[in-house]
Length: 114
Length: 113
Image (cartoon, rainbow over all chains, first blue to last red; front, top):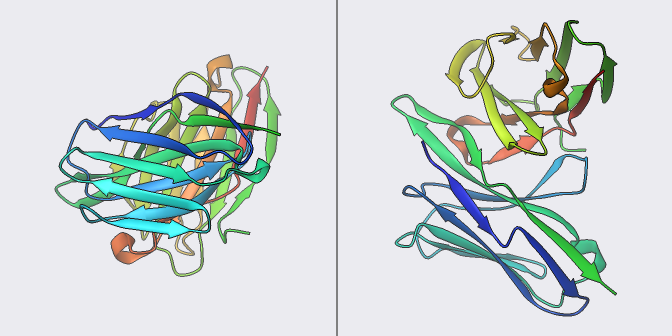
């Protein structure tokens, strides 16, 4: 079965600094999703990457997919308190019939210090 | 509001009991997925339904079952509850081809005492 490893597990960053979160898969990535979760709340969709080399940005968050390395990175520029939370990467898993939901990493806990 | 509605938001029940969690998918989405999130296991895929039919099974216990009704809402039934079943249970829905990604509900927090 596919496994996703996220690093780091937790991150404390001073407000205004840049940061990167990585997600590495044990198998080929067909679709990679990034979600943000506030503690105890639902998952908020950030970005979906499907092609090797693809890069997407939304406001100050950029995600890239390196298909060869089976890895995705999430980069936040000039971090703000609103960026604090848990960042989860998820990957499409497939059986013979098609996509069967997402396998998730354990998450990266991000704390922004003022 | 993501468009995926889960009820109830919170549930407290005793060991050995049975509960039902409900999910209404985003309008037009035929697929419904159930996930369990606990501190030690993270977010685990339980089961998927597509247009009323079971499509895929993940790490779902035999004490748990689910179904999707003709109006596409889904219910997750948890029986013979144990303390370890305490977790956040999420429902997600997706459209055809997954081009829209997966939209998650706000979850049901289950506490077994």
